[in-house]
Image (cartoon, rainbow, N blue to C red; front, side, top):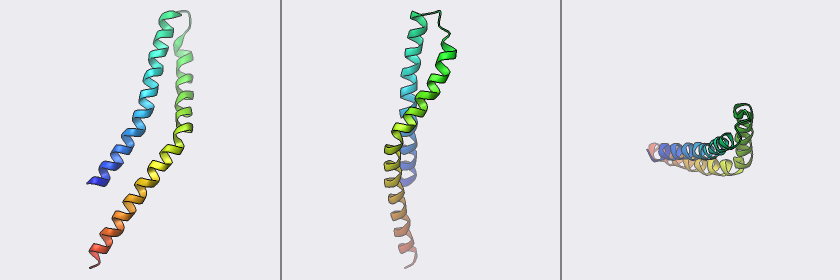
Length: 88
């Protein structure tokens, strides 16, 4: 049960990083829309959100790989321990 909780925690951390940055970006877009109503924010905002999401993925890949490697190592060691227990 602990390992599945770790996998859920990792997924939540990844999703939270994207969500937090995009929510802040949407607040900035709302402020720009209020300050400069002549700009059609939908045409500017959607491509910018995609670009920001890809940038987060690009810069966060190193951290994600390190987290996944440690999680996979932990799961593999648990499976090996389980197989040793079952082989007795």
